[in-house]
Structure formats: C-alpha cells, structure tokens
Length: 410
Image 1: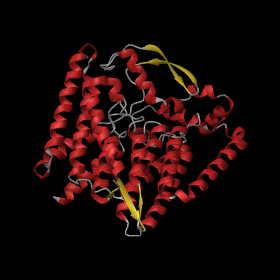
Image 2: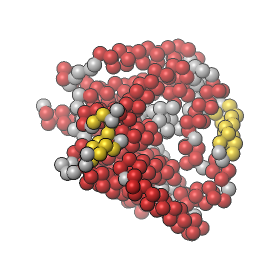
Image 3: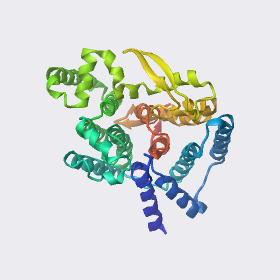
Image 4: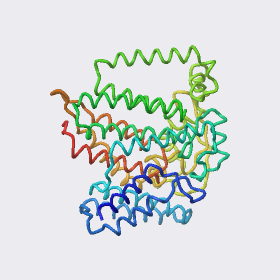
C-alpha cells in the first residue's frame, strides 16, 4: 500500500509541475491533476483529515461561486463553469494533500523536473518539433517562437510560461534546500544563491523571456537583501556592469528578444507598451481597470470588448478590455468582482502569513519569510492560468513548510 501511495502521489506531483502535457485538444492546462487527485481522494479518504474551519470556508467558496453564476447567467456556458469549478477542486485537493503530508517532495524531484524542462528545451533549439506532440498547442506556434528569437517552450505552453516554471522551481528549491540538507545554514544559503543564479542563466539562454528573466532578477535581489546585506552593494555594482555590457553590445544582439526590449527601453520607452513582457508586467492594473467597464460584479464570461486606456509610466496604453487578461489570482477580481473577494481573502491569508517566519544562522535571524512572500506573489498573483495547479501548490506548500520547520520572526 505504501509503495502504491508513493507512486500515485509522485504521478500527481508530476502533473502539478507538467500541467501542459496531455492529450486534450484546445486547452493549455490539462485535466490530469484533477482526475488523478479525485481518484486518490476516493482511495485514501479514510487517511485524510480536513480541519473544520477550512471545510466550512471551502463550502462558502462554492456557494459564492454558484451565486456568481446566478447573477451572470446570461453569459454562462458549460466550459466556463467547469473551468472555475476545477480551480475550486485544485484548492481543496492541494490543501488536503499538503496538509496531510501526502507529497514526498524533495529537492531531487525538483532538480529532475528542471533537468527535463531544460534538456527538452535545449534539444528544441536544434529540432523544434521534438516532444511537440506532448503539448496540445500547435506546432506552428512552436516554430514561430524559435524563429522570432523568443526561445523555446519545452514542455510548457510558450517560452514565457517555461520561464515561469523555472522561477517556480527556484523558490521551491530554496525552501527545500533550507529544510533538507544536513549542513550548516550558511552553506545552505550559499547553495541557494548558486541555484538561483543557475536558474537565471537557464531563463536567459533557454526560455529567453524578458518577463521571466526580470522576475528571476527580482528573486536574486531579494535573496541578496535577506541573506547578504553586506554584499548587496556588490550585487548592485554587478548589475550596473551587466547593463553597461548590454548597452555596449546591444546592437549586435538584436536577434535576442530580451536585447530588443532593452534597446527599446533606452531608445523609445513608449514602444515598450507594444511588448508582451511589459503588458504582462501591467497585468494587475489592466485587470483592475477592466472592472471599470464590466462593473463591480465582475466580467464573468461577458463576451463584450471595450476600447480602453490606462495611464502608465511609459505613456498611455490603449488596448481592448475583455473578460480576461493574463490570469494570475487577480483574475478572480476581474471575473467575479465582489464575488471574488472570498477567494482573494483566502489567498491573502496564506501569503501574508509567510512574513512571520525566519531562519537563524550563527545566532542571527534572517527574514526568509520576506523572500518567500515576494517570490510567491510574483509567481501566483501577477500572471498565469488560474487553473494551473502549481500556483496553489506553491502557496500551500511554502506556507505549511514555513509553519512546520521555521521559527516565528514576530
């Protein structure tokens, strides 16, 4: 029984971090996780403990979701209902499985997943069709990615999502390194920094997503700020050198999408608003701005499209406001308006609770919770498909790991 349980939950863990691999056409996030999680829940239900408060809140979320369907019934279809009901199931399954320690997740698992994404991505530079059958998005899209200098998608839906997956693995490795290895905390911290830099290089060379590289750079800065304040200035000087190098050779690097964006940033910043990376960065204000056009009950599945504008530091952004943008947990407000507040409160409780924890190195406290708060926010709230299970996995796994294995900072 133990061997079957371990194998089943490793398979479920695989589907958490390879959510785009599957056979169902016309969708990015495959239903593998939900299907196998339902099977696991039924099979091991007698071993599962669910705290009463969470169960009541989950029922409340389901009721609120049904109310939102009543008020937005005119635009509702079966695909819309199933999509967001799956999100609710993701919340329940992941909370229950992680709370009951059903996932035997180790740094070796995560390194293996990173290796698979990286190797497939490297091979796709030479053979863009390699493993293209594993992801249902068209092969033409894969070819367009490589031809435009955007990098490869590997086993993700697009290069930006591949970069996001590398960032996800980064923060998971940081927390696993600090809880697994039987070495001094100072060595764990140094190894964590090395891992962060290596994944930054993977983002730069394989995914080539300016947005993912920017987020990964934030991770490096946060890590240095938390653990290496005395060398933080050195990192700043290094960044200046890197930018100087980019400016010096930027004209010779125009085949790289990242270099193109840097060139535009220094030559004509207003053109940045046409870049997908910057629009992804503005996902939160754009999603909130869209509520102005759809009303306080949210956009739901309203098919209407409005000519909209948003003032930004780069100039005025004119765009078409629709019922969705680039996802992230902010999509709950865009889709459900006031009905999305309970889900947002659940999210905010878990992410702000991370701030309470620290790690002690040589009798000195380091606010590691700050790092995980910032990193988790960028991974989960900013963008990404709300149906992807890894977003909720990160939120719950980091929270429960901090709670069980780290000290309270305040």
